[in-house]
Amino acid sequence: MEVRFLGRVNSNFYLMEVQEIDKVSSITRKEFESKYLKPSRPVIITDMARQWPAIEKWTWSYFKQVVGETTVPVYNNTRAGAKVPVNGGDGFMKFGNYIDQISLGPSEWRIFLFNLFKHVPVLKQDFTFPEELLSGFLKSYPMLFVGGKGFIAHMHYDLDLSHIFHTQFLGRKRVLLLHNNQSQLIYKMPSTVESAASFVNWQDGVHTKSFPALKYAKGYTAILEHGDTLFMPSGYWHHMQYMDSGFAMSLRAIPAGLSAKFNTLYHLLGMRGFNNMLIKVAPQWWYDYKRKFARNQAEKAISALISVNHPQQVQPFF
Image 1 (cartoon, rainbow, N blue to C red):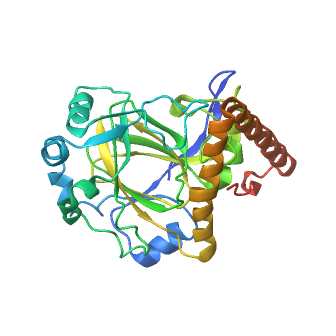
Image 2 (cartoon, one colour; image 1 turned 60 degrees about the horizontal axis):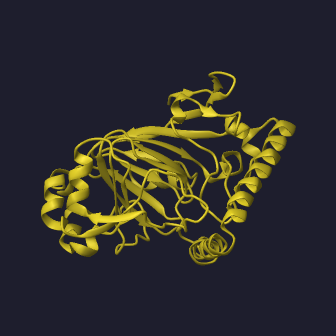
């Protein structure tokens, strides 16, 4: 396993300590549970989806044919401002027109959490859920993610805390993943699933002058290619950059256990509702407060690391 250690690029930037995500061609349930699910580690399964009809069938032209006239919400490449609610779209366009746009080259627009299969149910025949590895799949909610070359999905973890099998179709995508126990070090903001830090071009160095705790964070990375399926355990932070125009599909499974289900409900109902309420009634104050709180927590995490000189002591911070 390749590990790239942190180091100074210049006075403002450091390279993060990251390791390559494990890749396997196939895996048994026993191996999956012992090596990845229980220890909460990501893995890329390269051959899981290669027998699906979708691998060859799903193309830009096919999607234009079956769902090109459907109007979809699109999201721009700018990080949310003070008055933007959670998952608020930035505009709408027909899916076919969107495909034409991103096929021409770099684009600032992305389609996020699009349930294509609600519009074209027959597409569910083109893939299978990996129930040989995991139970609890949300079979009504396979989600499509589409983006133009250069688009960035900024650092976050998923609100419903699902385990995710994310299969890449057209194009390549660079991913950076971090366990949720790194939350304080990457400036998690309260009542959100977002980081206050910037990870744009993180592979060239993170801005540790503005976000000094990032030099202590440890992550995983890989470039996803056509047919790769990435398993992301519940609560994993992820930052994704589209190296080419392309799309991927996520299959989601709710973690087992009553406490996990209560945590999901809290995120979906309590936390998101509270955050959106404050965005509505006190947007600028809340925007500034979240970032100040994140910095205070990061400073505490740095102090704890320095005192014990052991990064693994940082605790989960849901």
